[in-house]
Length: 151
Image (tube, rainbow, N blue to C red):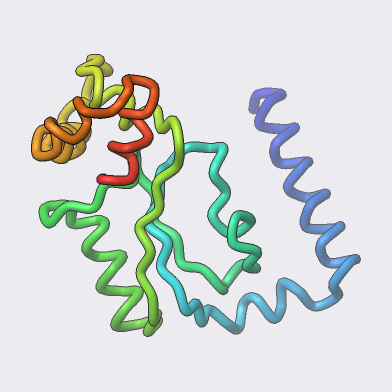
């Protein structure tokens, strides 16, 4: 096993130890409950930690993430998450969340080719194309974040 993975596993063990020391029984309680009121559908960007952004603990937020926080009718994975969240977990709120300066949205906005993900980003380009006049009316510096909001 690589040193990087050894370090990652060591950090996980330390986090678990510190969490249990700070809040005894945390993991035992966590095993017995998953009752989120919210389903968060957001970008896979590593800088956007869903639970931390809204101040919720594990088990309080059900999360689905993908590049550019896309939600389309043909994505069986996302649809399965929504169905499970609503039917099994009985979440009350579904939130689709974007973030400023999203790299996936920027790639879609500028037609930057990135490989297989180009197929996925086509959905964002459809939103871009549907709102082309509005986006063109904005200064270029605001267009990506405007498309994030539209998406």
